[in-house]
Length: 82
Image (tube, rainbow, N blue to C red):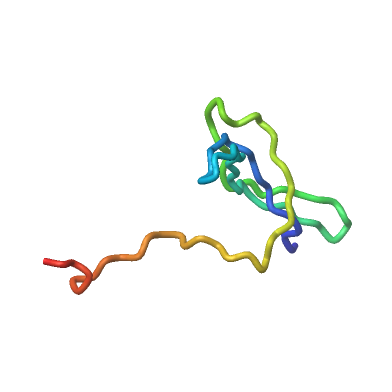
């Protein structure tokens, strides 16, 4: 099966640098299509708390979109100024 959509939940709001209120999203899994045309969902995580409405939306996979690094770079001895 190949993933056809990403499963996304809205988990709150934030204000950008221009003062506009925006939704905060988190990808919680993927949507797959089976050979018979039916769909199935693989959920990797679920948000908790009052900010999540309980709804999960499907969005395009954005295969060409740059993803943020999974972790921050590790400092080496040459990066420490002392």
